[in-house]
Image 1 (tube, rainbow, N blue to C red):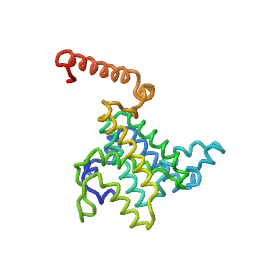
Image 2 (cartoon, one colour):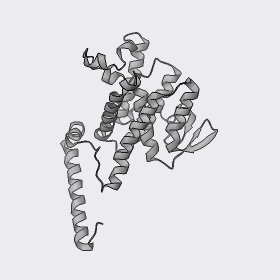
Image 3 (cartoon, rainbow, N blue to C red):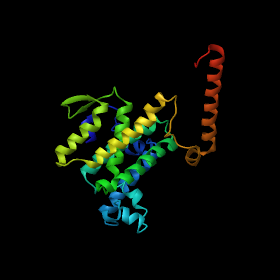
Image 4 (tube, one colour):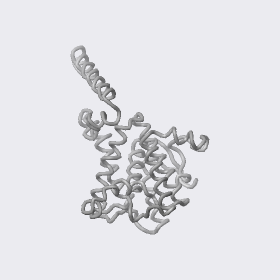
Length: 251
């Protein structure tokens, strides 16, 4: 599927596999590794898909908490379809993580929050494996943040990035002949995140209600990064006050 879409990132084929792997940001690298590993374990019959899917009863009544994670990292057995899913997932995950300054704290917070919402709504739509839904969240957010990027589908028509999630849903309907509930849920969750992270701050004076808390940043990046962020915020406030005193308005 990824090969059908052009634009939006650097070509991966020019890099050796190992170099390509280690150039991925840390969160994307771990997610990609876990996805391939899980498929290999299922293929070799070390585990079965029945041990991986999300079930509210299995998690909260039988204490099988690992399902909260494995449901996001299993995309099916080894196949060409899996290769497409993995390439497509890591492509947009990588571009989003790199656009966040390769910050493990910020990108992992995005993954944690959106995964939590998907887990809450999954029982309502009888969704067992949620990796595609989470991948759709990332595709939607990337597409809204890159509105002028042009993509092509099968070389037949060109469209702008914001239409990408809907093109993929239409293709999924044609290919599998059923409504992709997971992709639709991913688009809805992605839209909520994009609105409160990208649109809301422009309306309400820079407030970002979905930014990671300081303890989360410290957990992933240490105290130095937290102090640096605080210092930057203080510098911005000082500059704003100077602007008010000298010009009577923000600069």
